[in-house]
Image 1 (cartoon, one colour):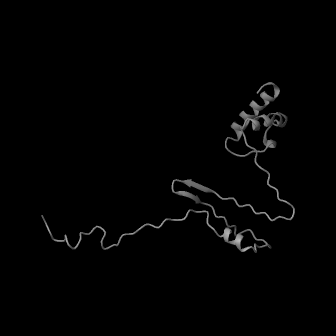
Image 2 (image 1 turned 90 degrees about the vertical axis):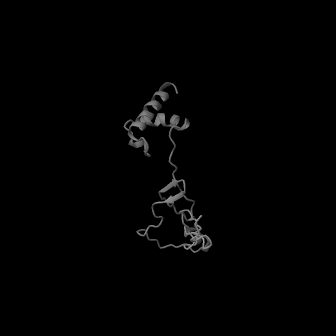
Length: 134
């Protein structure tokens, strides 16, 4: 990083770290727009920030986007926010049975069934050894 672009990118990177340490931001939110636009290219090239993708769809295509919060733990992935939006209504519906089946699947991991021992035999001595003392 050298010259005017290098100075602008260093200034911009320190401004981003100070004002937006872990959150997304728009270039228009920065105070000095010209310095920001000059330095952002170099910062992106060096991988210091990542651009947020703008999502578009093709003409005539149906697109749905779902966002949820997930916890990654040692036992698996757990969805902690619901994927359904009861407040969102649509005139359209999905008629493809394969897609409907996919939408009905859970993001939560499948629970493993534990082998349960017979309640009578757990922790009790055998009938053969009952009442025998050495």
